[in-house]
Image (spheres, rainbow, N blue to C red):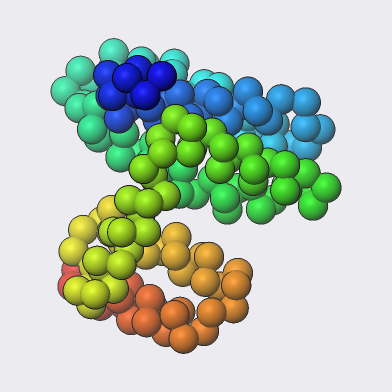
Length: 160
């Protein structure tokens, strides 16, 4: 099976992760989960539709958007009823780990590079740091939050 993963493109792996998540969320009687499930199961047609409407859109651009969606998924899952939260979180981790295994490791590595560098260089990095802020806020990690707010403020100040 690892040979199949090697042949699949990054976009293919992301679509597979979304579809798997959608499948794993079946049968959970929660509106938040059902909306996420429907979105996940519609990713393949979304990608095809985007490509047909604008063939100049590169697969890497779509993949970047889907990766950002994966980063934001835990925030969406937090809106699920507490009875289902552990199950949906496990489904998310399982789907991503099985179909796009480097996702969590790559994000952690990128995040540490940003912290070591002491500045955000791109919009993708900005959103990665914003995601880390959301997680740190939820965990009450105030020292880390001060550092991350400083990175975001400096990045946003560049555009002024």
